[in-house]
Amino acid sequence: MTSPGTGDRRRRSPVFLIGLTLIALLLFAGFSALGAWQVQRLGWKRDLIAQVDARIHATPVPAPASADAADAYKRVTATGTFLHDRSTLVQASTVRGAGYWVLTPLRQRNGALLMINRGFVPPEAKTRYDRPEGQVTVTGLLRLTEPGGGFLRANDPAADRWYSRDIAAIAAARRLAPAITSYFIDAQAGPSPDRLPVAGLTVIRFPNNHLQYAITWFALAIMTVVAYIIVMRHTALDKRP
Image (cartoon, rainbow, N blue to C red; front, top):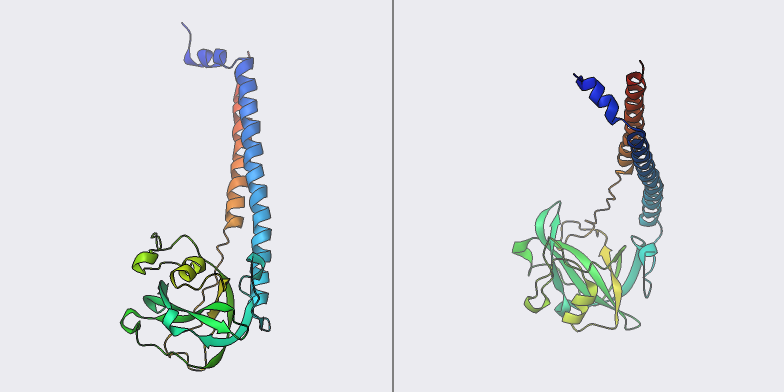
């Protein structure tokens, strides 16, 4: 009569051991590669955070005619006249609660239009906020357009319901294109921070969990090696007479 242990030994053929080794190698290589990738991402994220921190504290520069990812969060300044009749309210969730961002086009001296996020207003004050007339100078952070909607809802231009700051869509709905820039400016807080709209509420937060992810992947790689060694040791012991 064959004992269970004898049956187990018979099943551990050379083919089984080769297959086990290949699987262990693939798992180890895969987990290690993922860990190394997360280390690279960690370095990239730290560089990005340092770059953004330098931009938001730099001396303001004139607002550019166009912008890309390398310009995000730069401090810029622009002078012109607000077109209050073309303002758009975009749903917002802030430290002050839910409400709206007030996006108003600014006609610059050269005739070009630039969208300004003037700040936050609560729902009960969405028609009762300051509308400065004449020439104004705005200083703030350059922000890239936000296409695709937000709050798990798509923008609905036909119903004038906006959930993200999609500059192209807003410009089309307000008949501002193509003279408007593809980005907007988050206005910085003014001398009266409690006046509506409330500016200076830009949240600058970059999730940085890459170190934890790297540790997890490398730990799985080590666990794979340990498990492989344990199995091979048991196999060697089983082969003893």
